[in-house]
Amino acid sequence: MAHFNVKLVSYISRMKNSPLILDTKPVSYFIGEGALSHSSKVLENFTRFIILFDENVRTHCLPILREKVPAVAMSDVICIESGENKKNLDQAVYIWNELTRLNVDRDALIINLGGGVITDIGGFAAATFKRGIQFVNFPTTVLGMVDAAIGGKTGIDFEHFKNQVGLFVDPVSVIIDPIFLDTLEDKQWQSGFAEILKYGLIIDRDLWRILYGKKYREIGDLNKVIIKAARDKIDIVKHDFKEKGIRKNLNFGHTIGHAFESHFLLSGHPVTHGQAIAAGMICEAWLSCQLFEFDPSQLDEIVEMIDANFQRLDVNESHIPQLLNLMRQDKKVRHGKLNFSLLKKIGKALHNVEVLPSLVVDSIKYYINT
Image (cartoon, rainbow, N blue to C red; front, side, top):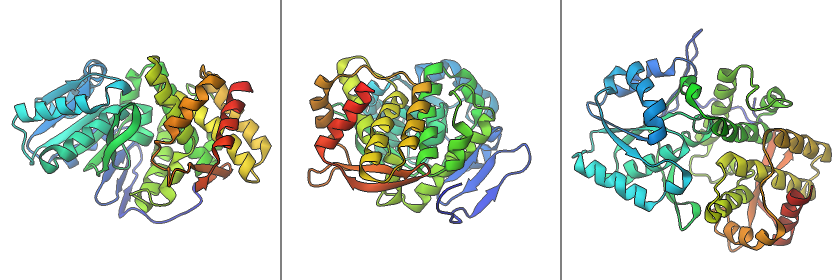
């Protein structure tokens, strides 16, 4: 599976036709078909629940949660506006105001029901309100299930910079049930697929082989792929929660990708996180070829796979100065130097790789001109 194999969980269960259960202390994970039916094991320790969601989730996913998890059917709710451009301080203040209006105390449980924006801002709001209220994540998107809901990263965007303000705070539990994906629009399927591809590239060559040659709507056993990708993220996070070492490998494609994402957000024409990261992975795979003995045929393989699943972003060379400026706000920057997570080969990544700005410029030109 991965290039390191450590017994990370104190309890692992996978009965036939049941979800994977991981008790990693302090977080319990329920992953796969039927996970919702096991969530009562987490909720039984609480007597009050507040469900946070956006308007899309209200329509498509909230009824499923209420039907499958009767314990929360009559809970108080907070609905916020959807979209990455709403993952900001104003929205966090709105959530705090609603929690205050509802007289929520520290014995309550916040249920974050939604994609990455909801789990990011919901975890942040919970962790800061009254110095901390416990929360649980019910991701409803592919991106949320394999990435955003796992790992305790909470936060908001600030001054158009991605995840500029936030905290590392673990949820009580993460319940990942593909039942919600029946409601997902196509572009969100595509967005999450980028992060699944990333796991194949940085840690899980077997996963890459399963995916290679397929389009994001052609995954055969989706349940298996989600479990495999989620396990990859859980393994890394358990090894390095505060991102001091190997967790930085998860940033492959993200240094340039986040700059693309912020650029389009500023332009008023936002792209999905997955579209931006897919573009960033092409640039950073090219950088890997320049700095390591990364096989050029593997670069071709990566570009072919990404181009089969994502349209190229509408960027040109005049955008490069702004993209570089956005990268200088990246959390991996140290002493003004750009640090990247790059590939040694498919299935193995390295972090803390310093890259000269001139080479970063060339990688973006490669993306634009090939």
